[in-house]
Image (tube, rainbow, N blue to C red; front, side):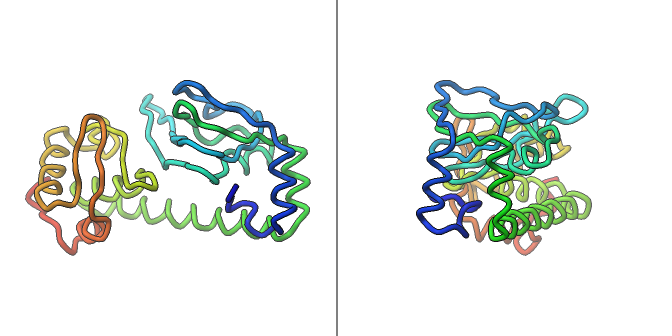
Length: 218
């Protein structure tokens, strides 16, 4: 298994750590951990898809990112012994390898793994700061574009509908429909039932950065 968290370890040590975990195969779509609950352990995604969701104060379920094979979940919370910072919603047939706090603390005695975890945290901070800056400074069409980029999976697909995007970006459904229609006209995205597929990431990045945007859509 290729897992960034374990990338600094030699192959034999990486395999031994994975083998020491507990394999769990989730048979149906469901939340496996919930924001605010104490950790049941850290997880590495073996296969499948996990949506990381932040529960807002007004009850909205806001996807933060999509985790796929090799990504780790709940690592910092498990090590620190603090509640989960987000909810993890797992797609059916997803395989997870679960590790106890004791196993994670033992892993963190290797400074190579500490450095990898710290680098991942720094990248997450940077992504969060960029998103917050965009949310404050950009017009609604660009916020929508940036949010699409933020919550896509590795196949550049977003599993959300227009109503959700309107709530998540603080806009109306009509505005979201206009923006998605414009992006589809430019062949930047394809829209299906409950899905949006980004066909040109560079074009969407340019649109989100105001290099190729239409302010009249807001």
